Image 1: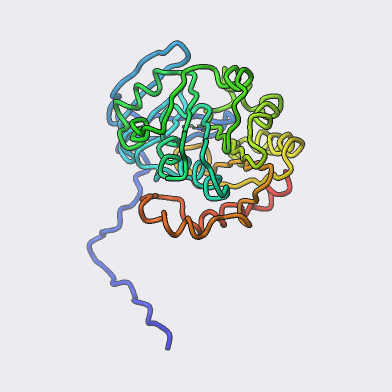
Image 2: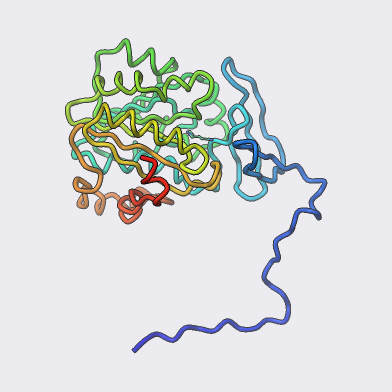
Length: 305
Ligand code: SPD
């Protein structure tokens, strides 16, 4: 027998909010991050909590009206309390559950520490090193985002403050996973999106190592997403693009490039380990269905790769 679908009760008093076209809020402070010169992401801001200029960039922490506190670097929103942690969880858990023994993890960038904190939800990880250029981003994040930065206190975490490219070019160490938790390819970060850096990473991965690189919005930056995919396909035997919904980033649709010397992100997904850890991890976005579904790509993205 099929379940009866409840009909909605007609309600004379309008309890459904009609969206405000903006006029009633003309005096409010709205922050718009523009992209491609024709559109933008807009957030209503209640107040600016802290603004500072580090050696490398402007750093703002604001209280948004709808998404809690947000961290903005060089005018680009990086993370908000209300974004459901989609970006950080997808960057960390997809490769961690695809590798059978992820003991040594390196994060390049990642100053808000959200990726680090998610990496450390995995008991298999013995050491998580984060190499971030701008120490000030970590300090500001520790003051305002306790949930994101919780991992910093973990004994397995090691923080290094220096240029990620220089760090990898001068070390002889190798890792199981390297995660590129980068801001956009502008300023000093631009070099970390290039093939020469990806080749250095290949050398610094163990024989069964995995790299995941954030690869921008397939809507607004399809050229970047596709050229990174092409470059990485010339370096790694396995390259797979996956995506997530990230409300605070341009187009709310974000991509990651999974590159591997050996393991496949779906064929080698560790179901047993996921079942054991899933509940304890208290994720907001990532789960096993999302892991598999995130590799499904729209036709315009497939065509470009
Ligand atoms: N336009 C913002 C894109 C930022 C992508 N990476 C964010 C890193 C935050 N840890």
